[in-house]
Amino acid sequence: MNSSPMNHQQTLWTIGGGKGGSGKSFLAANIGICLSKLGVQVILVDADLGGANLHTLLGIPPPFPSLSDFIQKKVQNLHDVLIPSGISNLRLLTGTQDLLNSADVKSLQRRKLLRAIRSLGGDCIIVDLGGGNAASILDFFLMSDGGILVVTPEPTSVENTYRFLKSAFYRRLRQSVSSQSVKSLIDQAMNGKNESGIRNPYELFREAKRLNLEDANRMMEETEAFRPNLILNQVQSKRDIEMGFFIRSACQKYFGIHLHYLGYVVYDQEVGSSIRKRRPLILENERCRASQCISEIASKLLQSQTRASPME
Amino acid sequence: MKWINEQTYYEILEINPEATPKEIQKAYDRAKEAFRHDSIAIYTLFSNEEIQEIQEAIEEAYRVLMNEATRKEYDQTHRERIRGTFVKEESRRVEREEEKGTTLSFKEIALHLEEMEYRGKSLKEVRERLGIDLKSISEETKIHIKILQAIEEEDLPNLPPLVYLKGFLKAYAKLLNLDPQKVIEGYLRVFHREGGEKKR
Image 1: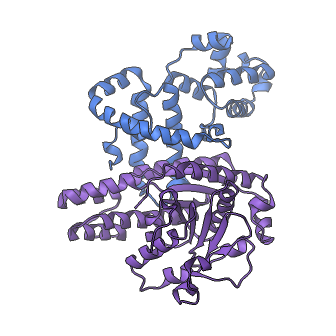
Image 2: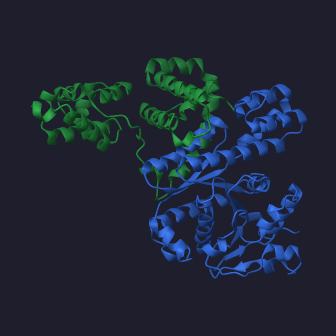
Image 3: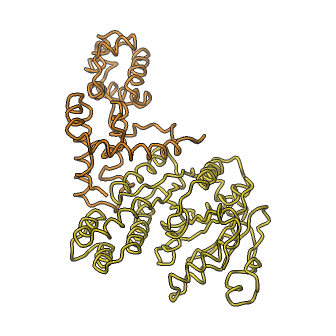
C-alpha cells in the first residue's frame, strides 16, 4: 500500500496499557475531538480487543462499515470504511480488533495493517488499544510514533501499567538483538522467576554484556530511544498529580527509560454524565475542569507532533 | 542503564550538578516520597530489598550534597562521572520544562508533600541543612532572633501571641521554601497538643 502524501507530517499515537476502565477510550475520543477543533485532520482507530466502543463515546449508532468489510472485500476502497463522526476533521475506523485478535496474525501482517491505516491520510491518527498485554497490542504500541499509557492513581492500575510496560520493554529489546543466547536471556528475564536469577533490567543488561557485547549495546540504544508517554486520569488531589512524577522517577530507576509525563485529567462528575448522554465531554461541556485538562494534553501532543521521533 | 549504586549522587536525586541547596532539598523530598515502601507509584516494580537500597542511596546522596564541604570533595573526586551526567541532565531539563510550561501548570504543585510534621525542631533541621544561620533568618524576616529561637526550641512560654506566631511561621517557612500553610498547621498542632495556650 502506498503511503499517504501527508505521511511526512502524520503522527500515529497509540493509547494503551493498564486495565480496562482507566479511561483510554474516553481520552482517545476527546483528545481526538480537541485536535480536530484545532484544524488537525484526525482519524480515531478503535482497536480495543476487549470491547470496542469508541463509536458510542462519539454518539455514532451502528451499523457502520469496518475494516473487516474491506478485508472481506465487501467494500472496494479502504477509504469507504472510514466513518464520518459528524464532527469536522474527525473520522473513525473500526474493525481492526478483529484482525488484531486473530491468533494467526503475524508481525508482518500487523505492519501491513499499520501501513494501511497510515495510508488513510490524516495529520494525526489515534489508536485506542484497550487494555491487555497481547502480542499484537504490544507491537502496535511499539510500532507507533508515540505510545501513551493511561493510569489512574490506584495500585491496581499502576500494577497493570507496569506489567504492560515490562512486556513492551522486553519485547522491544528482544526484537533488537540478534544472538539466540541473548534472546533466550530476555525471555528468562520476562518470566520473572528464572533460573539465571535475573530480577530486573539492570541484571539483564549485566548478563547480556557478558554474553554478547554488540547485543548489549543495541539494548542500551533501544532503552535510550524508548520514550513512552503517561497520562494520569481521574486525579483528585495534588498528591495524585505528583504521582506522575514519581512514576517517571521509578521508570528511570528501574528500566533506565525516560517516561514523558504528558499531563493529568482531574476527576470530574461531568465525565460520567457526558458518557451516559453519549455526547463527547469536550462538546458537551468544554469549560469543565476535565475538558480543560484534556485540551492541555491535546495541545502538548500537537506541539510534540513536529518533533516526535518514531519509536520504531 | 545504571543501577542505583552506579549512579552519581546527582543522578540519584535527578538534579543538575549545579543545583542549589534549595533544589537539592526539593529533589530529596520528592525522591523520598516517591520511594517510600507504601508509595503507589512503585507498586510491584521493585522488591523490598531494592527499595531499601534506593532509599539508602537517596539519604547518602542528600547527606553528602547538602554539606558544602563533603559536596566539594565529592565533586572533585567524581569530576569525570559528574560531567557525563550533566550533558544528559541538560537534555532532560528541556523536556521537564516543557512539562511545566502550560496553564494547568505543574508549577503550582507544592513540592513538599512529605507527611513530616513541621515543628520547631524540623524547621531547625531544614534551616541547618540549607546552611543558614538564625541571624540571617532574623535579618531577612525582621523577626527577633529570640523569637526565632523560641519557635525552633518550642519554648512555649516565650512564644508570641498566636496571631503573631502565625505570621512569623509564615515568613520563616517562605524563606526556607516550605509550604507556609503546612508549616503553620503542623506547628500549631504541636502547640495545641502540648497545651501552648494554657501554659502562657
